[in-house]
Length: 106
Image (cartoon, rainbow, N blue to C red; front, side, top):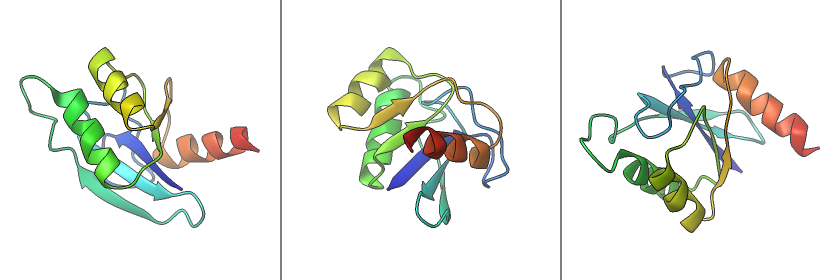
């Protein structure tokens, strides 16, 4: 499963971004191997519609889960429309957020 984490930087040791739509990066983690790819968020600087555009980008990468601090209402609608699970309230590093999510699924 692919998990997208909103991030302030481009690594597993970067901090989780408190915002989904306007985060600087998404770290996309394979939950089986913990291998990851970095995606700069093209919606970060948009004047409007950042959340839905970020959701579209995540969907196109094949992610089924988003871990973030908070999600705006328009992004939430888009993520739900795409069938992507939303995990709010995350903090710490990307690695910690993914590991905590995976522990909670067992």
